[in-house]
Length: 392
Length: 221
Image (cartoon, rainbow over all chains, first blue to last red; front, side, top):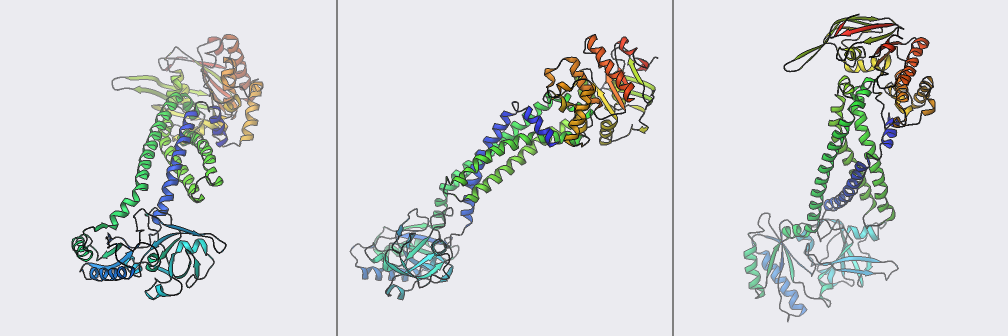
């Protein structure tokens, strides 16, 4: 039966060229949308590695005239005072890069024969407790670590997996990143740009690093008790204005910042999915129309096939099969073009996402085509041979 | 081979009931070449369709090749048609998108015969009707007579016991009609195939073993 179908559809190729092109174009669009969606979904599923749900970001403006000792003292005093607020659970000072803020710092070093490129974040010794980090090994740096011979750093799991996959532990390893630093801990996961960000190698530098020639920390993360994030904002603002003698205090919700940070991916994704949905509806309606027309033109053939011994099931299978043959041809050509992307490494997306995109597109199109072909084919199977043969 | 007992067929619409066949009895022994004649609308094609199991009688009993087939379900009737019956139509009913040999092998396709065997038997059938040199042509490249010979090859490729021909020469000139008639006569004589032919052509009917005449759905001779 398959060879018969292939022969028949080859002989009818001119009549089916539009369906073929429609399937091919649908595949190309779906392949793009699915690959983009699966790739981003996978990123979304990978954990951020820190808590943000009950946290506020705070920016203050410290007096420019303070020396480094005065800054340390101001940091200590402000943090202590904020912790006295009833709804505040934890407070940490961070450098100029804040989670979901949109900024990135990066540094590279090839001093020891291989290139290390890492994102950078700066935070004080209370960051792990405030952001509720999970550690793969070691822990967060302490006040004492900051006065040791080599300044402490903490790296994320992606850093270790990328550059030291064979190492049993990185703790106490000296790494040449902006000078020699001692690794004190490896956090399980940490990506701060958005849920859709790539989990890239990242290094946390302590207060001491930032103080060396950099600006003092002027951002805080304040973790509140669950459900108190909104209530704490006003007392927090008043306390900070009192402490800094400056009304230039900005407070924002990290949960809302996360949503904003995700938008550059979410909005195009929704637009693409809606367009694909319309495209699929269009294909379905087009196929319905084409098949109903084909069947009305082939009533005598259907009658003949039934007279020659085709059962209703075989007539249904014949018409569904014909559409599937054209569909398979379109999908094969589409797949041929699609696999060039991972094979030639034309885009910086891992190959598995392209293959998943191909599979999902093929399955979706086959499912829709089969469903759309089934109803007209069943109708064809129900034709009465005596009537349709007589019509000729 | 064919036994029709008390066959009636009526078509109903909301307001009218048309009687196509009325209490018709007919027996066709194995190996007979029977022709059926009658004016248009007398029920000839309806009778042939009932014999061919592509239409059902409103009343009566159909026995074909010793089997009472009147109450067969659709699937069983399809199988019976495929194995026991061959059809030849006035308007050939060839599929234009298939080559001659592919048209001929259609009945074997529904019998699940392998592709090599299908092709071999189809070429044999075409040889039998003198058209093996046109096996890979398409129907629109053939004359009317050649098309009907392809249809005959298709009808006999499954070696059916009964051949039902509905005005097989109706669309052909007399010369081609004679050729087709010769092929049918040869099939009947050489293979012993039982043939029932509906025709308007008295000259063709006289070449068959027996002639049955219908009028207004009733047998008149």
